[in-house]
Length: 343
Image (cartoon, rainbow, N blue to C red; front, side, top):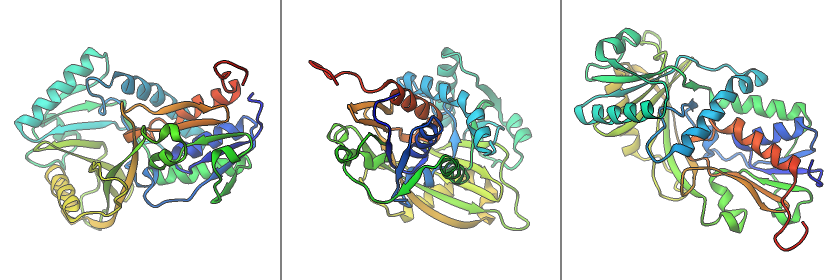
């Protein structure tokens, strides 16, 4: 175990709470500094746990880490008593160009030895009769999961409190905190240590939440990820409706939800699942993912008393178990010796 007994986690999103829970459960006294921003990526997220359908050539390390973390998720969710949607993902195409993208993804996944099955329009409608008429073909990825992100956050906070984690909004610079500081503040991590300043950046994403009204077609059983004329859109089912997402903009910490984003997401979702036109628009949100240069998270010592756990980009929820496990290992091992001398 690290020589420092106390752990201070900066950030109360899914990464920070998971790290705090694992550390407290292992016997570390833990404090979480949480400003509860309504634009945190964990609060705004759709809840997909989908490394296979997120895969793309060049991101092999991201895929491998995601698959490793996905394998931890059933036990992680069971410990938290959080239900998982295990129905899988359907990746869909609505025109020839989109179909070609699916062909490329399928070929790549086949080369990588990952499970994804090409399905026809007829097979898709047998799985999800509510799909729109322009849906041409798809991929079935049965191993993908999804989770209600807000129920997950509630469960993580409860688990932390069970192990006497202290919560506060009062932050001090990492160098002023005794013990070890874990920087897990998502996109805001870049301002908390010089080593992260030019590594972590905010990536804006806008998301809509829809509620099914009486008499409307219920949400799809599967998570649906589609390309509509080249634009990506996803529909993640909830018990009472859908989460639609997500845009991706490199615009700093601009928290406005634009009219164009709402229009495009609703139009593309209606193309894929026409019944959304009868749903109620319950919420529009903008959140900030923590981007990194290579899409891989930064999970390592920055200094003898500072650990980073940030830069998860689109995969914060997915990578929560593996990140918490790795941070706990770092805490137990202690910081490596400084070059040229003892730590």
